[in-house]
Image (cartoon, rainbow, N blue to C red; front, side, top):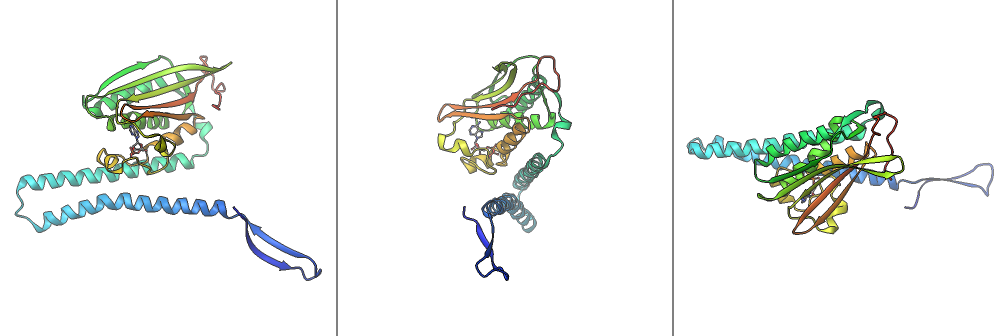
Length: 275
Ligand code: ADP
């Protein structure tokens, strides 16, 4: 963008000389606009469940004669909405923590991705409640230098999305592999494939933006906060990794988290950075 002229000063000593002070404010303005949009989104996301809860509270208060069954169903809906708010706040805190971290490299430790993937698959099976078939292929003894909790967040968001966006009877395949990508470097690939509805190509570049949803009704219905893939992106970037997304509408999606791996001798200084 063009720089904004802040001030034009005619120097008192030389009639010919003019001092022009400018500032490039485009970046600052953009950041401001992003921030404003983010606050508006968060407010909206919190207000929706609050409105629902308040509505049911009023009904319950004003109509003591309501049958017990109906009261119970209102209470169940209120607790669902309050869980949504709790999840949103948890994701907001995770995201802000990921963004404001400083001493990351000091806090990194060897993390066993195989064990981590097993934990995440276990949690996803519970979320799925036997509605899906899981196919798992996890290579043993894959390590990265990283922050366990952030890697857990990344993997679980990918796998929980697969569960939430795949209709019952669908198949979810989880693979953890390791491949050599340069003479001396290996990378770990955590791949989640589902047989869900798939995502149209024009949406794919935007999926990691905060609150970007392909179908917001469906996302809310499935308990989504709209922040899951933004968290994945940040958590992987913190490990010099990246996210790859491939999808075919009508047949399913594949999300790959790719992370530079530790050498087999597990030395801390042996991690590469992905191009
Ligand atoms: P949400 O909480 O809405 O799921 P995410 O950031 O995790 O937010 O995902 C962003 C959007 O990407 C979702 O709203 C959904 O439209 C789409 N999406 C994510 N994962 C999948 C998947 N496995 N299959 C189909 N669509 C998906």
